Length: 360
Image 1 (cartoon, helix red, strand yellow):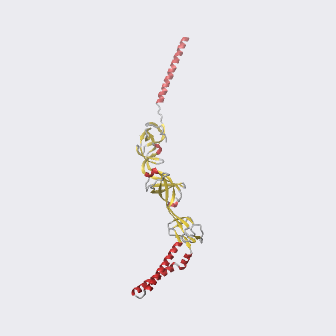
Image 2 (image 1 turned 90 degrees about the vertical axis):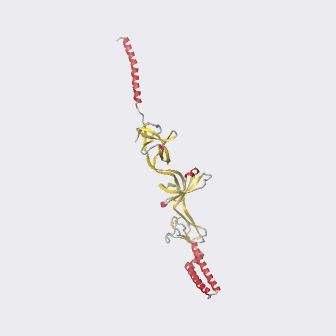
Image 3 (image 1 turned 30 degrees about the vertical axis):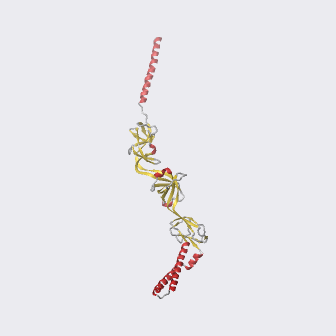
């Protein structure tokens, strides 16, 4: 081959190589264009469940009924006994309505004890008998008017003495007007002199308790008497106490712009104590067997709520109508059916008909 022929062959090679490279490049583009990118997602099947909507707030517990017992007279103290004849009563002891909590002994009561209720009753019965017998004789003309007046006076005196004895006896016995527990009891020892009006004990009934709640004024139209309430306290993190709205204030506080709600709670087991701080969820709406999804699965597209349903390896966007929602779930009224697979993770970049890969 001459030098000229060599140069001609080399030039031909330089022309062919770029053409081969270009052809190879076109083949790569066509191969890449044939690949389909799939977005990894996680799905859950739409199913049925119970759901409720709440108004959440906090409040303080108090007893439904509480009574402070005071000394009606000045006297010397003797505290009641547990079970009538057991040990001396102490704070925390249960008491029944009518049970003696304390006894006060005064000079008047000592005189009463000497005479005795039974003796006064006997005197009254004799005076009554004498009066009736001589009244018949007076009607027949055998007894003078003066004698009859004497028997009337004797009967009135006997009645007064008996009634006064009962009153004094009643004043000395301080009894529980309600059943409950002694939440406070005087520290005075037996025999101590107590002044009339001095506080001796406090009895609380907290088989049922009340929780006083404060809610924003804007929610007043959402609350009704009788609505169920779920109450919790940090001391019992796994326990939910059931209650109902018993009273709604008719006014809104000018400073706080809140209104008061009173909730009656069944205190089974006596776990809730007056003075406790509680969290309360007032159930404003509830539905059983609703079609529900995780709340975060509902996204906003075109200013409307929507979800992505996986069908044939693609994410199909569906507009939905929502209902009740709580902190975790949301009710779906229309737009999807039971059992459809809804994207709950990886929906951020999805559009209608986006290819997806479902991760387990």
